[in-house]
Each structure stands twice: as structure tokens, then as C-alpha cells.
Amino acid sequence: MERIFSGVQPTGNLHLGNYLGAIRNWVRLQSEFECLYCVVDLHAITVPQDPAELRANTLEVTAGLLAAGIDPAKNIIFNQSRVSGHSELAWIFNCVARLGWLNRMTQFKEKAGKRRDNATVGLYAYPNLMAADILLYKATHVPVGEDQKQHLELTRDIAQAFNSMFDVDFFPEPEPVILEDVARVMSLRNGANKMSKSDESDYSRINLTDDSDTIALKIQKARTDPAPLPGSHEEFEGRPEAENLVGIYAALSDMSIAEVCEEFGGENFSMFKSRLTEVAVTQLVPIGDEMKRLSQDVTHIESVLSVGADRARDIATPVLLEVQKIIGLS
Image 1 (tube, helix red, strand yellow):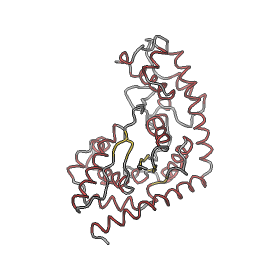
Image 2 (image 1 turned 135 degrees about the vertical axis):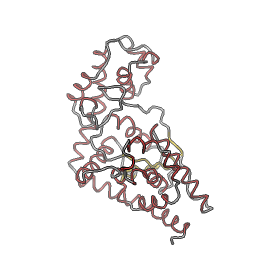
Image 3 (image 1 turned 60 degrees about the vertical axis):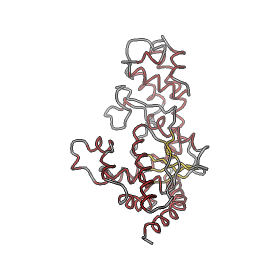
Image 4 (image 1 turned 180 degrees about the vertical axis):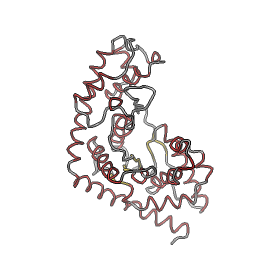
């Protein structure tokens, strides 16, 4: 079976954007691929972290994955730092990747901002670690969003360069899994911004742990405009908040935006928000309740991560040993 690797940052406070943008699709992929789902705590420390929060967030994210329906018996769920091969292969790739390749990475420019000279080397070399994450398991496919396509291209470049440098056909060039129905979930307060845990207003997002009353209140307060719902997708121009709410409804209902427009076109938003609340509560509250329950069972979550790391290591170790042999380290 073809193998998928995908990672999630342990940022804590999982929200609707995380669920619709990645986690729900991971659940769907587990029946089609051999999947490794990794909480990438080594990536997290490329920016300053509170150690206690990082540990807590790793457990919380794992609870969220399990609550959403990812089966640890079918998949490998682990956190990155438990498998030392990620760091070891990343260093080897530091000696394969070219500065020019990294200089083209737009995410570094965005995250480092104007204080680029003050950014850590880890943040700069982040894409090499991402390549190591994927190639350590010889993953054949990687689910990618728009913001990760460039990093996957770099992974393919590194695989090609390694194979060429040592005249081997060792690393595969992983293919992107482009999921057509991935929802781009925006802030409930500003349709021009992505939904984010870093937004100061909690009303900008629906957290996976929100109860039904909180979800209803946030949807009720979500920004809209005075015009009725559009009758077609083409009529959303200049109406980002309207498009966002319709997109959320479509994603949670497994409908296309065109189907939602056909059903609700011409209706007012007060009625539509009531329907959206019903769908959101039905879909999200059971996940949130299970996530809260699992978060109280730290022993179970630690066991999932430990067993997952052992299984990941079983795949990674022979790959790393072969890499060391190829390049002359053993």
C-alpha cells in the first residue's frame, strides 16, 4: 500500500480551520493509505516555546486527532522528537540542500519578517527537516495545502539531489495529495484573514472544545453583510464573510458551495446562521466532548504516542542505516 506522511504543529487550541483543513481529511485517507501522522514538536521549537505549554499542546493535539476519528491501530500516531532519525536525517539533508533553494522559501520570509537576521537557523532550515520527516519513511504521498506545496517541491529536489550525488535510486519523489474539498476557513470576524488561534478575539474562531451554546453564540455574532445569501458562487465577489459562512456550511454538510447557494439563495443570514449552528453543533460537539475526555487520560495518550514512536522507529531505522552506508558513515 502507498504510504502517507503528514504532520501537525502542537500549537494547542485546535479550531474549526484545523479540522476542516487537515484533520477530517486525514481520517478519510486512513482507509486508502498506510498513514503516519506526526505531531511535529521539533518544528514547533523553531520559534520560542514555553516548555510546559509545548508538552501540554502535544498531548492536546493528539487527543484531538483521536477524537476526530484517527485510529491508532490502523495508523501510526507519534510525536517527532521521539524518533531521533528525524534530526539525524535532517542534518544529512543540510549537507545536500542548497542555500539558493532555501532562499526561495516564502514561508521563511513571512515568518521571519523584517527581523530576518534575528531569526534562528532552525527556522531557516525548517524545510530540510520537513524533507527528512517525509523521506525517513520513504513516504510516497503527502497531503498538502496551498502553503505547503513549495516545501514538498523542495523535498522532491532533495530526494533527486541525494540520489544523483551518490548514484543511487534510493529515495522516492513523493507526490502531493491534493484534496479537492479542503475548506479554507476564515476568521468569523474578518473574512480576509484565516481562522487562527493567535487572533486576540475568541469570537474569531470555533474551537473544537467549544460547547453547543458557545458555538451558537459565535455563529450568531459572526460578521456578515445586509444583503441576502447569493444564488450562485459568482455572486460572492466583495463579500468574504458571506463566502466564509457558506463555505463552512458546505464543508460540514459535505455539499458543494453551488448546492448551498441553490438551497439558500435569497434567504437572510439570520435564518442561515440557525441552520449553520445546527450542523456545526451536530458535527463538532461530539468531537469536543471526546477530546475533553481523552485529555483527562494522559496515560492513554502517552501510550498511543509511545507505541506509535516504536512503530515509526521500526520503519525509520533501516532507512537511516542504509543512508549512512550510502554516504560512508558506516
